[in-house]
Image 1 (cartoon, rainbow, N blue to C red):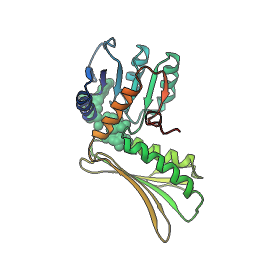
Image 2 (image 1 turned 90 degrees about the vertical axis):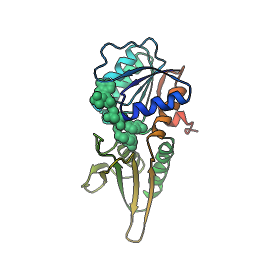
Image 3 (image 1 turned 180 degrees about the vertical axis):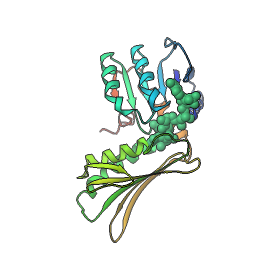
Length: 234
Ligand SMILES: NC(=O)C1=CN([C@@H]2O[C@H](COP(=O)(O)OP(=O)(O)OC[C@H]3O[C@@H](n4cnc5c(N)ncnc54)[C@H](OP(=O)(O)O)[C@@H]3O)[C@@H](O)[C@H]2O)C=CC1
Ligand SMILES: O=C(O)C1=N[C@H](C(=O)O)C[C@H](O)C1
């Protein structure tokens, strides 16, 4: 498979290694000053770039018939436009705030736990995410996905960074050293707490999930999620 990397930073480089270990070719490494882009050799584009670059990168791929795996966070104000363009061009698209296979399962646990805990008013939920000090966005895309899934499966009406009001989920963001990404969902009561946590040991899991998604999307058209890739909708 011929893969184009949009963004050749920490994640782009890790995806290059994982892709080559699986026998794929990297046919383009697109960075901020790449100039004219040749889409003709691309079977798939994998975008791990910057919040203000992602939408233009994704749109260019759809305009040129290239399926997109999008991992960049912090650009979702334009998500609906990306979906509309993909549909108009009969393209193929997967966005995930976190491509790790473990986090895809963690998202399912979070939804299920939220449903059960919504029956118990003794518990209050809170979220914490810890990342490396170079991360641009806060809270992380993964923390936002976790919060939105809790809201969909409970009576919480929103989330807020640090100070949450009534009916809102408090989210704490910490930036510590090289931490690849740790997410904790905590339900606390006066007498105990329950927490679920996913901790990435390095970036390989994010990269592997993105390459698996890129392999899976070949020959397909439509908008998909990692649940489709892992066949968790059954
Ligand atoms: N969904 C997931 O599983 C994961 C998502 N992420 C997300 O992926 C993104 C990238 O993370 P990471 O690799 O750590 O960040 P880096 O800062 O290491 O890499 C981003 C790269 O994008 C480049 N870039 C800037 N503008 C453009 C452009 N217009 N087109 C293409 N590339 C551009 C930057 O170049 P320059 O440095 O020259 O500006 C840089 O090399 C972030 O949004 C992060 O949150 C990260 C890990 C997992
Ligand atoms: O920027 C990162 O590094 C990461 N970003 C994603 C996010 O914002 O959730 C996923 C992962 O946690 C690493």
